[in-house]
Image (cartoon, rainbow, N blue to C red; front, side):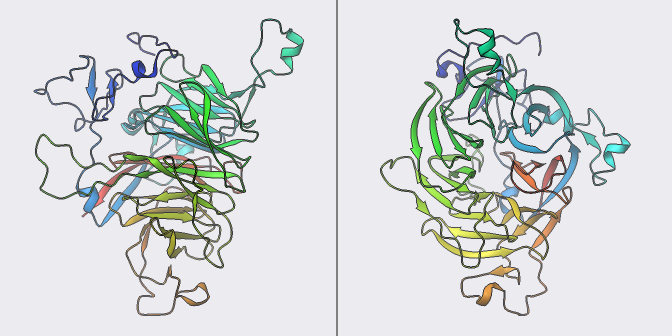
Length: 472
């Protein structure tokens, strides 16, 4: 921790802690956390932000070429070495700080840009387990334990009684972080959620949210950063108020362990040559704070609207001959479609407005279950992770790997497009379950982690940092 940092009081009003958020929603980071890229640094002639001379505005606008490109080139450059499977991943919007949670009960804080700039290299023995492009080692900034306790000690409680509730390490099955890394939320195996500080008094637990009775497998901070959506193996989904620590709403309807939750993207179409110098560039990472989806391990996907507390969730029907299983789902870039990964090596595409199944993308034979899926900003590609590889899939290409409702017996009909390959393989992961894939708001970097999140599957304990560039 640098000497110019000042302690903060986590009991202050949330508005004072978020005082570095501008009216238009842009984040401001302390000068302690600058991005090393000269492209995102303020120009020498530009005037400093009016809020404080020690802050500067982040540039989270995406390069327009990434919105209109034909494909993407994703190259792994660095590996963050872990001794155990990685079950959770959380990042700040600027990607300066990366948090990973492992099954060994430790949370590790990584300096992303120091890693990508080559501060440390992998040893020859470590490079043996990765592809040739991976030569850099992740820079570990700090780490702390994810401890679960049965209660809070009272002044009248004896030491013998306290020994029964001594903290123990818990696997980190879920994790999320504040946009400026002031605090983080960590899910525990006993159902509790720890609120810990990150940039000041790292790893210090300031409050524990208690209600779940099983491991917390999903944590998702609301776009306003005043609440959190949590999902657990006890089949419950809860919304918490982080100002009071109380439960705001319970979302009932799931019949199995929760596996995923994600807010709907806000779609702002990009029109070339229409931006003035004073206007913001295009963005694709903004979220609708009212609409989100949740998935469970039994393959169920429910769509929720926070503005309608009295209405039941809308459900996505599982296609015929599809096993009831889902570890991951995602929205399309414009929020109009939903993609769900299945155990039989397929990804189902749904229309959000009608909740109808559109088509299915079938992985090659023996690829294994699709453990993670995420979308790219051009609206064409999705990234599908299965046991054998990670694939960049073009959903607009007609091929024999596409299954539609009119297809008989779940197989594509032979045609002249049988030789068309709609995907490309991204190097890096092979032979393990992918637990998370994260893409930064500017779509310049990607992070992938391997772990089974407490369910079935093997792990390679790999955490890879990718560089993304458009293919025009």
